[in-house]
Image (cartoon, rainbow, N blue to C red; front, top):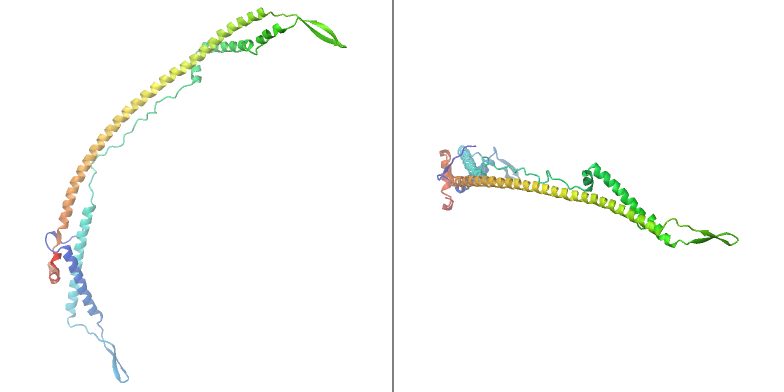
Length: 312
């Protein structure tokens, strides 16, 4: 950082320094204007018998050295004042832009929450349940299903046995056939089934069908019950996992929030202490004035008396 001549409660205020700097600049401009017109000769020409001046001659002033010294001292004083004005502005800007150092605050990392879906199981279906049956049970099921299906097909509506039973009462004892020339010849019809015989067969097959169908239904119900039971176990398993994950995650969240709250409190304390010091520093800089170097004092004194008291 550049050195400056700023000191507390002593010397020129920035308002005074700015005004004096402006006055130095105006005075230096006036001197520069005097020097700008200096030349080495005068030019004259005779026109119609009358002598006319084309170039006015301006010799160096007798006090040229004093003028140059004065001009240099004015600019030197102005440079001195402006440098210190800028220094104070820079110090104020730096102080106002400073921020608290929070490097010692240890903020907690976001917790790694447990995934409630991890370890969860999907529901099973009847394909899974059929795979749980023993080979013996499956073989019995295949047998019972085949018996129930084919016997049922034989005895149920539109089945062969039902057709025979429906047809038997309607078979006539005799029928006629035309052989030739419209002459009818009797056909003897002999029934080889009786209604009671067909009924007996139906009853025996119906009993077998009921038995086999009951076994088929037993295995189908068993499969559905296996699915229901297993999915109930899976639901409980998944609920236990989710509850455990929720507890872990709640504990992690609570610990994180506690640590974060402590970190924020520490940061707020640091900011408050920093702000207190920063304001004190700003106030200290604000009352700083320019301690005029003796080499510029004469110039400053010359203009200082011309300033209004309001600029003190």
